[in-house]
Image 1 (tube, rainbow, N blue to C red):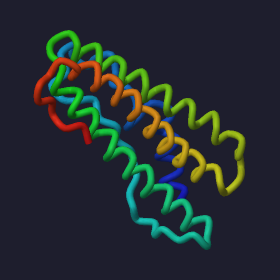
Image 2 (image 1 turned 90 degrees about the vertical axis):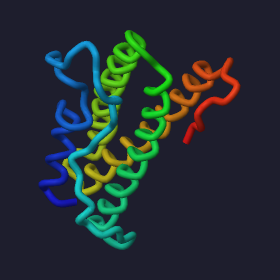
Image 3 (image 1 turned 180 degrees about the vertical axis):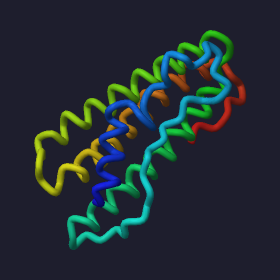
Length: 152
């Protein structure tokens, strides 16, 4: 992975994109709290080189974020008022946890060329775990609905 992409990933772990909104965010959030990453897909996916494996990890994370964000939008539209504010707070806390969790896990590879890839793969795995949580929340929100919106 290029140094710039690795630095961007570490920045995300420290609180930039993909991290919680700052305290200046208004109480009523106008949009769903989506997961975003400071990644580009400039690196090609190639299973034979570390740089190529990093490119594969980039793509895996972006795909995981896309699925997670689709789930977030569905849940977001089922909520109103203070429930949306609470959802934003919960999602922001989860993003902070995810980034710190994956930084911690990738620290096992500190100084090695696999560290950036392991960080990105961990983020993708945590996204998948969050999707299960959101599915349970969706089920609770729609349990009495005759025609609930489709969950992705």
